[in-house]
Image (cartoon, rainbow, N blue to C red; front, side, top):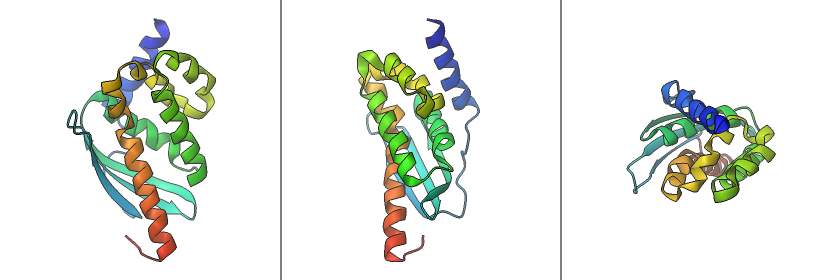
Length: 156
C-alpha cells in the first residue's frame, strides 16, 4: 500500500504543479484532442529540431489523471529522439493495457517510464485509462503531423 500511496502523490504533484503547461512558440505542429467520455481536453504543441523533440507545450483541462499524465509525458519525451520517444510511448501504452499486472510491469520498466510508473494503478480502471492516454495520443498525432510537414517542406 505504501507504493500505491507514493504513486498517488506523484500524480497529485504533477497535477498541482504541472510541467511544460502553457502553449509556447515556436512549434512545428499543434493538435487538439478531447476524451468524449469525460470531457477532458488537451491542445498540444510539439517542436522538433531534426529528429529530436525540442519542446512539448500544452493547455488542458480535466481530471487529475489526464493533467498529471501530460506533465509526466512532456518531462519524459523532451530531449529524446522521435524514435526513443515512440518507444517510451509504446511502453506507457503497454502499461495502460496491463490491467492486473500493472505494478509488476511498471517495476520492470521503471528506468524507461520514470514518473510514469505512477499510473500503474490506473490500468485497473478502463474508464480512467483514456484519461491517462489523452496527452500521449495527442503527442503521437502532433509528432506525426510535424514529421509529415517537415518531409513536405511545410512550416506551421
